[in-house]
Image (spheres, helix red, strand yellow):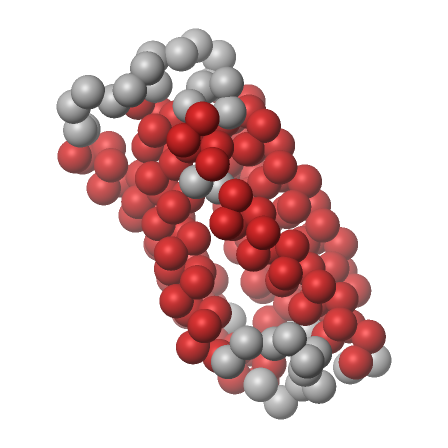
Length: 158
């Protein structure tokens, strides 16, 4: 069912949660982001500004997607909520392990778990709201690319 009216408070909350998680991860791991530039980089590594732009868009899409799920009148959303929370946690955890602990092998393991959680989120969102599921596809694709970068950084910086 389509959302017929906008619950502004819930929409703002839904958008703010992932944006704040991303902002907190950035604040906690800021020095690691700077050190990242000194690593041997894979050939496909984008310029630094691309990461902040892409992640801001992806966090906003996460929030909008969650809002569509939350506002849906369909039952049994618990598993979808669980996958959403799991991917947010794993996203934050990966950032800490990669940028602060500089543990590229463990971060590779965590980012693969993150991909699984995102796939689970998309799969559980789809029967509830197809648009919400589709809004997560750029996130899934970007994390696939980030997995490649993590793997290459692990290889190039041993």
